[in-house]
Length: 192
Image (tube, rainbow, N blue to C red):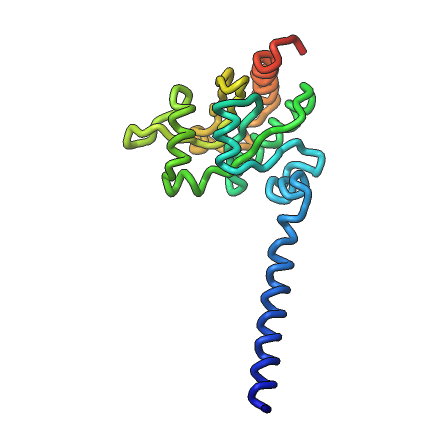
């Protein structure tokens, strides 16, 4: 009987530890998306307009819907800065959300869904050293009714040329804002 009680206490302790672990592990998932994004992209605050999407939702947007799709990874300083200026500018131009997917893992694994996105964006993508089309980040796409109307990955290949802090001077910020203004006009088919 004593062994049974000890076994029961051990099982309860293990179960309790597991439940505590799951609770704290899911706390970040319970944050509003803008808070979570701000915790990963530290140049942004909680008023950002990024919305996390899974890869199936992104494929649906690219093939059937209208919106702004942003591929990046929180591990990249180039993505950090790009996201900051993208958020600031699109909010200014009245865009309500930017659909976000960290595509890094799918790209590394070269998943079939990643390849589907590459095929959808192929006319806009750079090739890698093996002459394969790839999504280099940061990567931004504007889609209207399942048709790509604008794409930007201009800073995705310049990482070796300096730092994002050096790149994002006032001239480059203004150029980026002007490019995004044109994209928003194409998306909305009206002047802003």
